[in-house]
Image (cartoon, rainbow, N blue to C red; front, side, top):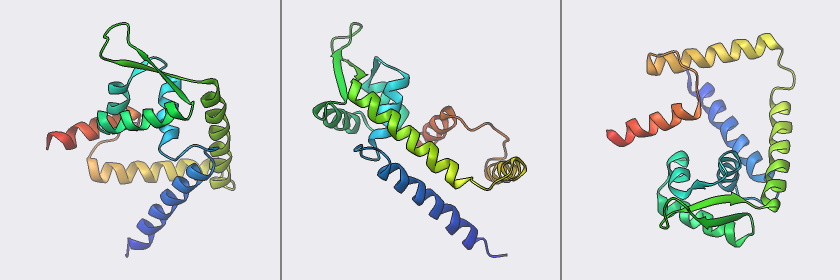
Length: 157
C-alpha cells in the first residue's frame, strides 16, 4: 500500500487549518493567536514562560510582544518578583479579537467534521492513537505538556 496519498492529505488538512487560522484571526497574524491565547489563560505570565510554551527563543518572543504591544493588544508590566522580568496582560481589544478568532475557528472545525457521526469521530481518534503508538510505542493523551516534553527531548539530543 502506498501511504503517500494519506500523508499528503494529512499535510494538506494541516495547511488548510493554518490558512483558516490566518484568515479567521480578525486582524491578527497567524503566530499571534497562540501567543494571545496563552496570555489570556495565564494573565501575568512572563516572556520567559511564553517562550518555553511556544517553543521559541526569548528574543523571538520579545519581538512578537513588541509588535503586539505596539498594536495595542498586550501590555507589559515590570514583574513585582523581579525587576528584570516583564509580566504580560491582554488589552480589551485583544480579548475581543481573540474571542472572535476562537469563534471563527470553532466554526471552521464544525465545518471540517460536519458529516462525521460520533462513531466516525471515535474511529478516527482510534486510528490517530494507533499512528502515535506505532511511532512512540506509547498510548498517551496528547496535551500541551506532550508537546513540551517532545521539545525538551529533541533539545537534549
